[in-house]
Length: 450
Image (cartoon, rainbow, N blue to C red):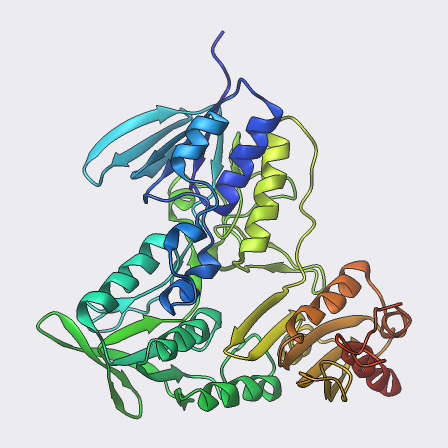
């Protein structure tokens, strides 16, 4: 009797988490993984730090190589194999190998873990050399090689999201003159503008020229190379351009198979990570998910979510029972010494939902004020007026600031009110916190308003 065959499309966080889990539960399962690049199971979040020189060797970003999956886990990982068509009726895949020849493979169960791709609007010059998006390790290595060969002096980053800010810092660390274009009034659109301003100020302090409230319109190209970025207000010379306009789900393969899509064209799945097609599952940056605070569908591409969804899919593919219950939108980043964190909903989102809320912003210190290394921290909390339910949190500050967001993320996941957050028995010692943790100090101020 032939073994039940699991085919996984995509060899990074979600795909390999699922494949490894299935192998741990079922030692004789036939598992095939298709990966279009040369790399598997790597930290995409570490790529800006590789380009910036904080990480010296790209191998340190790879958790498990294709060779290790083959030898240790007995998983048939095939690199440079790109799935280009799914036939859900015949349960077969059409695959492009090494960019040219095509083959076909059958599956009994299929997991789509195709990730996301950087967004680039259709503007003149977008195909020119020297313009990069950052999403895979292969794309990061292309940036690194370009910088080594071309020795650029001027960089322009288009977009002020997480990747845009981290790459702006990376370019500064490598000695480039850096400009950043953002159409919003402040960078980091996942923060409220008052908190985003703190991040904008941090970028200016490290030497980044910010051009806010300016729309990106085109690239100037000379001899096939990008030479400038054109906005509605000016032209910015560039030897290298980094797109930081966010990502979009790689869901075209699923759409071509008439698999149902959801929020922002992410693949629609249930809590078990099943799609609308029989025997087809999906996980990671290619899927839409559920926001536990708003109660609505959402698309958020983060490695933490991808790994958890991959584990849930793997448990279910191995015959177990697991459920992914959604997200609260927690994320952290840093610009040199300034740490940035957020979770839950923003004021704009709360207004759109029609929720009557209150907000409080406080400034404090990361440690006891008298202790060496104490730095500033600004905390913003949002809560529902009618019942005190915590709805969102944003933090900007020096070392020790960002991970405090986990207090708020835990509180929202548990459905705690502001009063219950104040009652939490948090740790204290002068090297780590003031007597009242800044998050609880913000909660005390917010409680006065609700």
